[in-house]
Length: 240
Image (cartoon, rainbow, N blue to C red):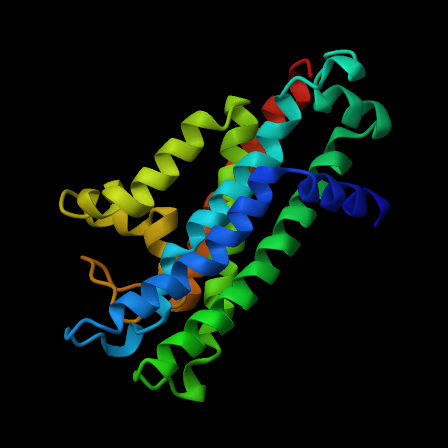
């Protein structure tokens, strides 16, 4: 618990983490408010589709939690990297990574719950009713956010820089979905982590394959486990 607490404190000192938190909460609610002015029928995914946009905050949080370890500290700290200090305090690299993953997962889960509440209330107030029977889908949103953050963190662990994973994830989520384009080429693209994961809470998601919510979650979790395994292996075998 002490290690997790230490990682939570480290997250709290990162300005980018606070920006990510604001993005995660404000962006989906803002999109929901804007969509309320649209005359387009939103269907069963009203509100929940807006929450898919908020995963950008989870991505940023997952990336900076890892990439910040590789940034040089100030001159008063000797100009070294945070990672050197972290591994000096925690001899076991596996325990260090587990604590960081727990801190990121806990923070993102909390943000997902807060963002879901704000966004769904905003959606309801703007005239689109949401049945209480749909509220369990919030669990799917939370799982999607947490798994995405861990996936982004795992890739950052391999690259040791946040530029590549952050650029790819944000572009794929907001500008053009490479995953969706690939579904036009092969149906197996539906099993990429982002598309499979969204099945946990979106009901009108178009695709060339039908995937049940639980199956989508398991597929995404498998991607995270594989990426985490690669990241841990690389991290354990190279110098800090």
